Image 1: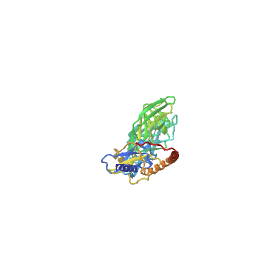
Image 2 (image 1 turned 135 degrees about the vertical axis):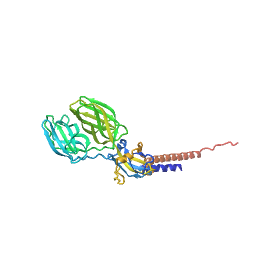
Image 3 (image 1 turned 90 degrees about the horizontal axis):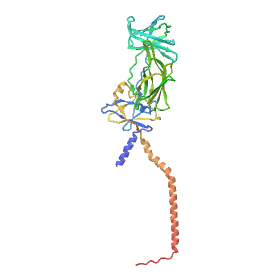
Image 4 (image 1 turned 60 degrees about the horizontal axis):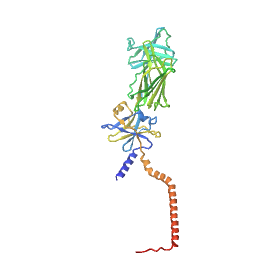
Length: 431
């Protein structure tokens, strides 16, 4: 009876395991959680085993029923819409400055001004003032810088960042410093950037940090840790005062791997002009679940950049499903041949509020998926066929051997009988 109960239990466990999924993790939901949608954070150790579109992630209840699930990353800050702006006046004082008056047509928030110009090879300091009525001016920024270079590393940086404000009128003064004035095609007021609540700082352990003077290069290899979220942004901290160099960022699953895959490339720079500094020391790209990164900074005409620190930011993806108290749930993944599921409209879209409310939910360690009930049901037949296929020749050989032994025994018996027929009888003394 106990054996039958155990077999029934194992069959029930197999029924809860979908076919084709190699791995699963138990979803650990804290006691007292209310019924409703929950969001389970997926770290890189899960994502790196999934399809690129994460379409093989499934949630299964303790009874073996598949639960509708939506897998998505946190909403990206979409392309910001430029603040409407028009140039009301351009005034030039040759050899001194060019002044641009901007009207935003209302008290609209902005965090920067981008100058549109076809002029090449220049460095200009910029002053920025704001006004609500066009007459009273307030200092917004006095040490802005715009740069255009064609060599040794091509570079164009035309945005003057400033503290977020809602001045309707902005006055931009470009200091020409005895240089020909820039040709102005237009201006763009940049909208404020929203805080990204789905970004997560990553721990960084630098394994290698070396410079190569012959190539004017810096090479850094770093470990982002076993438990981490997909890398989305990386930045450097350096004390080097002025440089402009190309960078290449690669990723791998091993620090000694020769199969580094390129993640991103671009330009890091820090341009100093008088008391003004312009820099770009971060790079943003599509999330990558890599553990090890290699950053190479090279080119330009200056010495290698001394990198003091590497900063990394990941992006969190979530599996959203409907939780019912009293039920256990498991997260299945690692099935490259699974079919995509249609979107379930009953589940809410991922929001920062939902992710925050589910922050205490965890997933357990990876476990191997067992055979499904269908596979177990057909296993005896497959095993019998397998055994017959291999045992049939052996059985035939044994039968032939047994037949030979029996025939030999019969022949021997017949010979013994014939021999005894002609033997003289023995005389036994009976006492």
